[in-house]
Image 1 (cartoon, protein in one colour):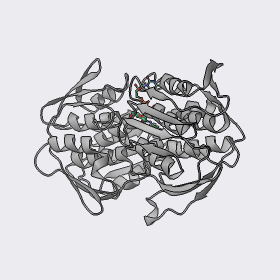
Image 2: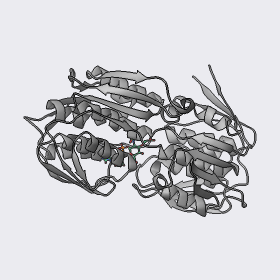
Image 3: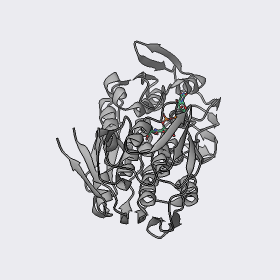
Length: 428
Ligand code: EPZ
C-alpha cells in the first residue's frame, strides 16, 4: 500500500490549482439517471470516488464516455459524457455502496426515473453512524413505498412520484440532494424546507434547472421545485472544491507561506476565511483565485464549532485542529455534525500535539513545534490533517493508508511539492 513521506519545515510559495468539487460531482453524476439525453460534466476531479460512481452508473446502464484530455496542463479535471438512454438495472449492490456511501445518491433518481430502486443500505463509517432515514422519509412523503429487506432499501412508486411539502427535521446534504433529484421528475410542486444550503446542493440545483426543472430558492434553506415529465441533456462545469481550497489555505497558514489557490472563490469559503484571518492569515481574492498568506507572527488560537453551510464545515475540522496544534494559546473545537470525528487526535498527539477531547469538544493547547512520526488515519479529512501536520513538523512524517487521500485530493503530493514542500509518494 502506498505511503506519503514528508519532511517538514518548508514554507509553501506558489500556485495550487483547485480541482472540481468531489462532493458536487457525485450527485451531479447521479443526476444523469434522470434523463435519456447526454449529461456532460466538466471540471470533474480525477479521484477514486469519481471512478466508483462511474462504475456504479455503468452497472445501472449509463453509457459513459471520457474526454481524457484535461485543459490547463491537466489540473482542471476531465469531462465525462453520461447517457442513461435506458436504465437497465435498478440495484446498487452492497460491494459498491460499502466502498462509497455517496452511492446512496442514486436512490432518488432511480426511483423517479424507473419507479423502482434497490440500494444497499450503507452501514456506519469511521466518522459516525450516518443513517439515511431522512432520505427515505422524504421519498416516502413523495409517494414511494419503502422497505428494508436483506440489507437493501427497496423503494417503489406506482406511477410518478408526487410533489410534497417536506420539512427536514435536521439539515442533511445527501437527503436534500436525493429529494431534489426526485422532485425534478415528480408530478407537481415539491417544497424542501430546512434544506441544506451547501454550494454542492446549489450546484446540483443549477444543473437540474439547466436540464429543465424549475427551482426557486437556490442557496437558501427552502427550495421550491416544479417537476417535469422529462428532463434534457446539458453541459455543466462542476464548481471548485471548497474543502480542497480550505485545506491548502490551512497548509499556507501552518507553514507561514504565501499561495494562490487558482480557480477558487472567497464566497465558497467565507466561514473558513473568517477563522483563518482571526488565526493570523491574510486572505484576498485575486484575478486568478484566492491568495492566502501568513507573514505576521505566530498562528493565534481561535474557537470553532462545525455547522451546516454557511457555518464552518465539518470537513475542515481536522485540518483546522492541526493548525491550532501549533497556535499561540488554546482553542476549543466543537464537532456538531458527526459523533466520531476526532480520530485524528491520537495521531496528532503522537506528533507532539496537546489535545484533550471532552465529548463533542476538543481543547487544543498550542505547542511551539510538532515532530515527525509514522502516522495513519481512518478517513479522508483526518488523513489530510496529518499531511498538514507533517508539513509543519520537524523531521520526517510517513502517512500510511494513502488510499483515503486518493478518494478526495487529486495529485496532492504534486500540488504541494510544486510550492516547495518536501513530499513524495512511496510505492510499495
Ligand atoms: C455530505 O455527507 C458530504 N459527503 C460529507 O463529506 C460531509 O461531511 C457532510 O455532507 C456534511 O457536510 C458528500 O457530499 C458525498 P449529511 P452526507 O447527510 O450527505 C445525519 C467528506 O469528507 N443524518 O449532511 O452523508 C448524519 O448522520 C465527506 O468529503 C441523519 O441523521 O452528510 C450527520 O450527523 C464525509 N439521517 C448529519 O445528519 C439522514 O438520513 C449530516 O449528514 C442523513 C443524515
